[in-house]
Length: 363
Ligand code: TXA
Ligand code: MG
Image 1 (tube, helix red, strand yellow):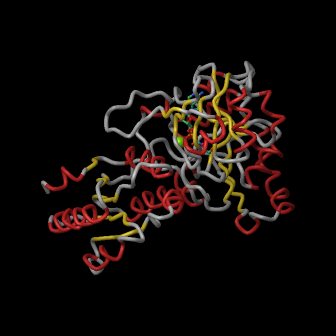
Image 2: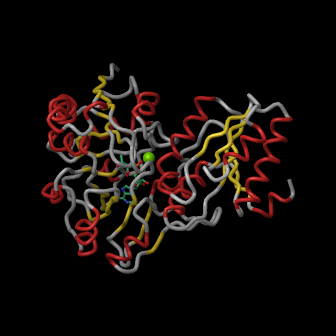
């Protein structure tokens, strides 16, 4: 398949130029094609949500299991009635406070939404993205757009245009090359069909942020290893896995960096090529130890004191190590609180192994 590229990188804040360039991909969507586009969270792969054939082509292009439902994207609140059959008070409050923005709300679906969008469930996830490219594209397309993240199934979500080209060039009708995604992790998924509402996937809008608006919310997936019963269908699949196995090190900052250094020495000694995921606070320590070694690559995920910077970078770093080609990735873990909880939700899924302080002492 020939993929048409629409480069708007020089115009991401120029509304009239965006409107001009995005006419064509919007037309492709309206006519039933599939087009990847930037959102503020991650890139999405969109299709007309009212067209069963188009939506099925998304699953094909991604290699996505058909029992994992998609999120429907809208540009305007007036489109919501065509997607859901009921807007409970908690949803109204969340919409008023957070839309457009990085939160998907699960409500009872409108019968007009085909079963393949929702994997046969009677609920549907909806969100209104916040960046101008998505907003203008959706407005011009004139239909609700079903869109999962624009990666091959199982790979880290794409946060830069080159990630999407890497995974989907030749598999989709169009790709909009826009800005790097600001947030960097996917939207919070909130189910308001139950009381109290449940967070099925944590994101940059946290339980604390939601509780300030709608009172008690529950979280479906706690961090304990192997303890989760899948609630969102997406939870049971392998996610975000980089090519090389990743070992996550949990504990206090000092013990984590020493354990990573010890493990790195052992792996390098065994002739392995390694990648280290550090933070601004610790990166110097690894550079001092291994900066001269060509078999060791060290990347900083951001600043611990600003977890948004780490969310912004985390998928890009996993993909960078795929491109560099390492045998093993050693990564620091983050405290699973607030946005840290959402980052660890992704890192836990990407990791082959998690070493807590107790395990590490035996190394
Ligand atoms: O930020 C995002 O949400 C991005 C951008 C493109 O908007 N989209 C995204 O889509 O991450 P996807 O398909 O990769 O993740 C959708 C998640 C899955 O975990 C899926 O199981 C869950 O939402 N989901 C969708 N509809 C659902 C429903 N009706 N009930 C429960 N979970 C649902
Ligand atoms: Mg995804």
